[in-house]
Image: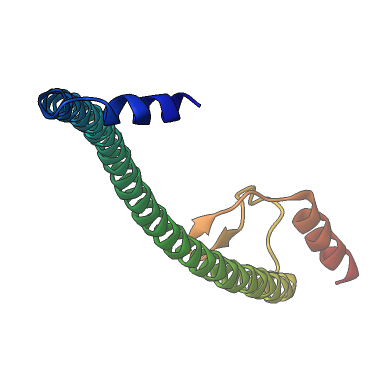
Length: 166
């Protein structure tokens, strides 16, 4: 209803009044356009500022991520080096263990062989000594390979036993 009154009132206006109204309406329109443009610009500027802040935060996050990735790669590289070194040390340890086992077995066999040879030599020496008569008045100890050895009760009793049989 108000529109109809405005329409009627506009139709009763003179051309000068209409001209003034038109100028006023255009100025109001320009004013509102500028306001809208200002709001849009403010919005865009705010949006740009906001986007720049977000962009800066994202760049910082990217830098941190890249730094962490580099640290991760370095740690992985170090881990691989440690694994390789551990593998090498394990291999060396196993080789040393095998060498030790072989050397120990060889030494045990040599000891057994030497003990066997020593027992055989003792047996031969006892047989030789049993065949010889050692005077009882000679208190010196028997010699083996040019060295004096201590007379044991076994040797003496064996020699005494031989003397008794003769």
